Amino acid sequence: YSDATGFQYVLPHVDYDLGTEQRAAGIGVADNGMVVGWSGDMGPFGLVRAAIYCPGTERMVDLNQKLLEDGAVVPANVWLGTALAVTPDGRTIVGQAIDFGTFANVPFVVRYDADPCALPSVVEIPTLDAAGFAALALGLAAVALVALRRLATK
Image (cartoon, rainbow, N blue to C red; front, side):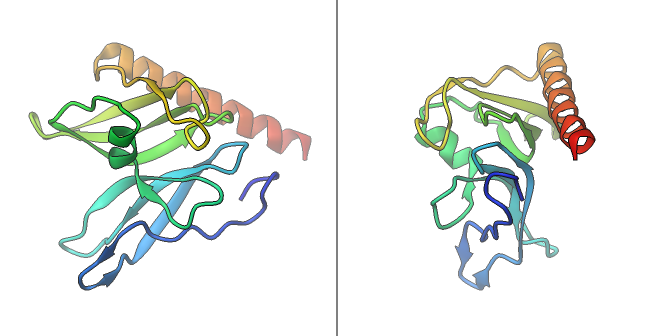
């Protein structure tokens, strides 16, 4: 839901051989109606994927795949698992990834230089170090501040 677009139903992003995924969750909404979150089959052998929905498209898509299509270089050992927040302009997405080299859950930050739904062009995906943690904290704080301001004005 957003003030600009109202309620949106976002479909899962992949049809498996055994049927459509059981769930998709939008966690963050940008001002343009772009939704980030996850999509996956939560059963015992399910896979959860970071997902993004652009207004006017039919389904959520795998953020890992979108980044590759947009020309980003994602480290081979990193899998973006859940997109947790997006800035109001839609240009920064933060979330949780898995580093298959260490099997640790690590934060990720994706920064686009323009609206990823209009003009895909990734500026950077910072390395997952202390600066990545700081960027994640700042991104989440910015999103929380905007949400609090919106609540205060209603």
